[in-house]
Image (cartoon, rainbow, N blue to C red; front, side, top):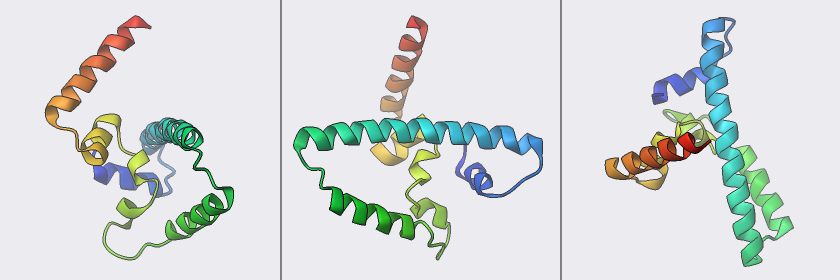
Length: 116
């Protein structure tokens, strides 16, 4: 899915054709967020770094920041943007994966998918 299509997620629509795409984007977002949350919780717990008051203050600031719509393409700066792109785009944009890395990832996914 291209970036322009993601912007449609934030527009209200009564068109059922848009709903299918919006639901697919939301599903990817939920799965990606759940994966990140589990990894981060484990990492913080194992390192003994979770400070509840600091976390709460930082979370509050992020929530406020996500209401800022100043500038061009503000959705790219929102905390949830990276969670709305598909897995291969995430690898490219958030993890600087090369085409070879993405191809290797795709191959591994195809392999494990056949196991289930």
